[in-house]
Image (cartoon, rainbow, N blue to C red):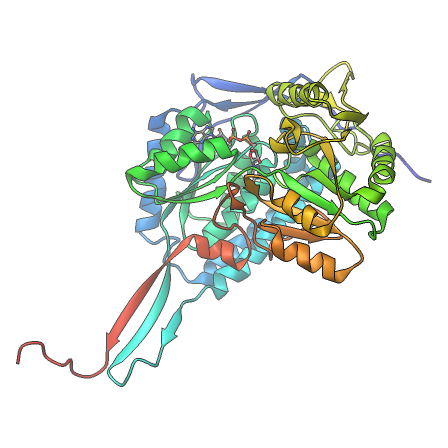
Length: 499
Ligand code: NAD
């Protein structure tokens, strides 16, 4: 018999967690706490500390000590890999708990959160392999008297600043790579989704990570995030968030010229040719904008579709949207959960109003859904969108899809590139020539052909243009957290300068 899985219940009291420095949770005592309401239920679920800059300094000092004394940075890579593999095992054992807290704070469906935790464990396993295969280069072609080596060294103390849309997934797309490289770190999660970043501290400690290697400071972006990017004793900051805050990170980092990894916004095209399997493409495009309520940096929010099939394709998408199950994030049947914050809900509804005002044709959705609690918006489809309209230019970060028809492949490529962003793109066609042409000419760091949002630890992430600097994950992701040193070795006696 097909039994419906039960809807999980809310915690009876909010969970209170201190921040984490040098292997210990710091007591919350009489500290100022930030109380988080579940965006799907309007109920308080967690309390975390509003840390001060002194707390950050303490965490950076712990990470610095741990880096300099070599307890992690200089141990054999096999030992680092063992810790990462154990962490993956522990994460799988605690997957249900981690997914539950991710859903409570972020509002994403519980089944999606479970899938993400599994993906995170896999990331740790992959990075364990990277730890062991990280290597430099040698030059045996410099003549009889000189031998050259290029060695890789961990970059040092890394500050990691993460957003609220995938709190645990984005964390785990970075932490194992930072650790695989031999760095120590201080993480600062978004103030609204801090719990799972703190739970990772428990997982890593249980896996045997030495104290001081992974530290977490909670609090606001304007205080802790800003101080982190300005900090003179942090060697690199990996920042994931909006392009506007990314810009302020570039200015703040100039004090000690720290390296920056920037993973920023996107306004990603989905190009659909008339020869695509339209029903499959419609399902993929609906998923690409509905997944995580469109609060996804790589959401395909611009639908660039061949004019001859544009109306038919709109109807297919509208029919898919009508069937999407929006609802309680704790219900395993839910496909699309809550908008993560009240502010983001207002932003999305503002863009929907703007789309109507500027003359776009509302084909489906556009409503605030009333379930008696929480913030929910129906998947929304606009037709007749032009490249001048605000909804086709700004990153909305919500479930809003804009249809823009094209006549020729050249025109599709020009439209796809008509944005300041360059994070991701998808193309749907049965013609390999068209697929390759588009893939090679659209400027985006991640590309999908006849699919979207697929991925794993092997393939790096990152953007072109104003979508960021550098790459996370994959072999490139580990290398970002290293620096290289050229070593010149004289063989035999030097040719004297003064004879
Ligand atoms: P945000 O930029 O407001 O915040 C991101 C993080 O930066 C948070 O931890 C925040 O506290 C912190 N922060 C805020 N002000 C800061 C400052 N002055 N200095 C340093 N840190 C500061 O972004 P958000 O609203 O949390 O997330 C949504 C944005 O993130 C979207 O633009 C989205 O595209 C982007 N994003 C990008 C990727 C990617 O991989 N490219 C992934 C996820 C999200």
